Amino acid sequence: MHFEDGQVPEEYRRYIGWKVGLVCLTGGLLALALVISISLGAANIPLDEVARALMGWASSKRFDVIVWNIRLPQALTSIVAGAGLSVAGAAMQSILRNPLGSPFTLGISHAAAFGAAFAVMILGGGIMTSASADTVNVTSPYLTTGVAFLFSLLAAGVIVAVSRLRGATPEIMILTGVALGALFTAGTMFLQYFADDVQLAAMVFWTFGDTARASWSELGVMSAVTLVCTVYFLANGWNYNAIDAGDETAKGLGVRVDRVRMVGMLLASMLTAVIIAFLGIIGFVGLVVPHMVRRVIGSDHRFLLPGSILAGGLLLLAADTTARLVLAPHVLPVSVLTAFLGAPVFIYLIIRGQRR
Image 1: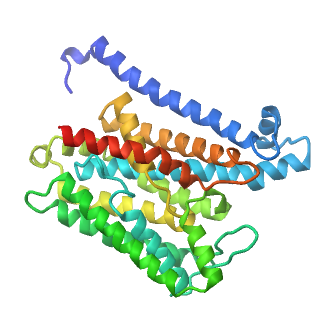
Image 2: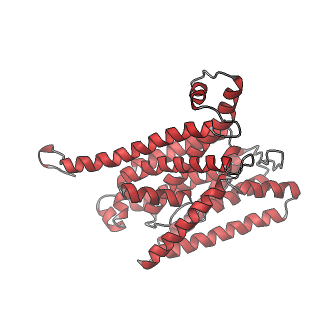
Image 3: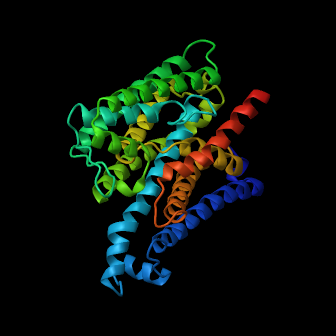
């Protein structure tokens, strides 16, 4: 944008400042929610003790163990997973020019879940256990993640191919995603049919997205992948703005639309595969959060993407904290709450689109 004499109009300055302020406010709320989440649980920890433990000055060994070994990795996992799924959903909605695009609605999450289950049970990528913690012990996380990525990439490739068909509408792409989701769900059920009792019990539990099962090592892998993909998405914010105006307009502005679309879907699929492979299916976060942020900040990806990243982390962290407390001492998988939140929003978006 060009302004005479290099002067930026005051209205535009306030407009940008408002959006930046909202993004910073979301970041501040996320930091506050992190401290509160760590303090709440079966054993409540005062906020000042949480701060002391985070700085390495815990007044007791018990607080130090609870903060660093249990609650901090779970809270950070919630933030990273929520941020990753949200930025992937925001990118998909722009890349496909489809307001209903997300890793969950397009079947990519189900494809990644099937790939992870296939690697664990068929390729020997892990040992399914049903121990006291009801977790899945994945002995080869990189093999599991790699196979999950391949299947999610397959689903993403089908979606991109359908989107390039002449006359393909958002409704057709969503129906394709539903069909893919049903197909990979059927594949997972096929594996479950031949599993023994222990494997079946553990496999069913694994499909429920749960951030508590990630350790520091899994968190490190997810954080690294999320960082790389996020940097790419943020660097292409202007390209996504151009694509929103139409493929022909974007090409006229010098955007290599096909390349941006393919690389974007590739990275969004990889990001989704890594999160699903470690945590299980967490639905609707990638769909709900970008729309919530878009209604407040707008569709400018310079602010929509960072806003979605922070809001996604905040939403999943809040949902995970609520899941730990609502039926205490029992702990609900966080995917249960995200489904309750996402399903009404999904129906609302479908109805609004039909009215248009």
